[in-house]
Image (cartoon, rainbow, N blue to C red; front, side, top):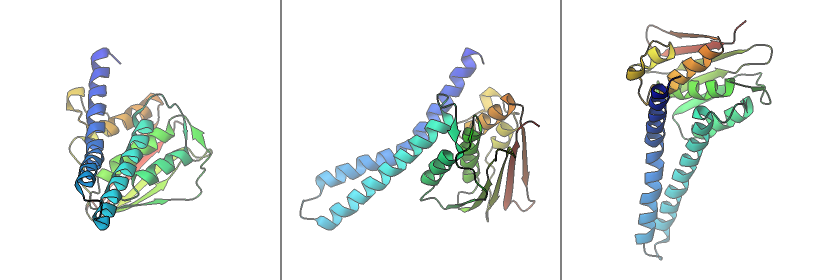
Length: 214
């Protein structure tokens, strides 16, 4: 990867992080300002403001922890159980319902599957902004396949995401929205895995499957 390419990826990841963190951090700021301006004898208002601050700080913390593993290169391995915890915390207040299929080997540590899982769930969640059900079949030691099935009333395939997943997007075409898809493509490609995407004609179901090389 040349220097200009690496710089472009870093810029996109930075934009993505700032975009996703500015809302909860801004809410914390607003809450603190309101709390400072609220008279001490207004207990009900103070309690509501503190709830806003707590909710926003938990959201920011969950997102930082999630992105640290999903986007960071310093974490070479993460167990499936740790990845699942990060996902559950990230989407705890989401309209998306996540169903984890059994068996689930939480102690299983595989070098690249954790990051693939996080970025895949992130992409599919953005395909269903109004909510839906995401079923996840995580890889097992004897079956290195990740399968995700999204069922929603309305699925949106944002511009450039499929191209980034399939490695058909140029560097100039990548955006902060499509960068997680590009990371999925690169991680799968570097390890000679196979990625397949399917969708129903009515666009209310979306399937993503990733296999390790046989």
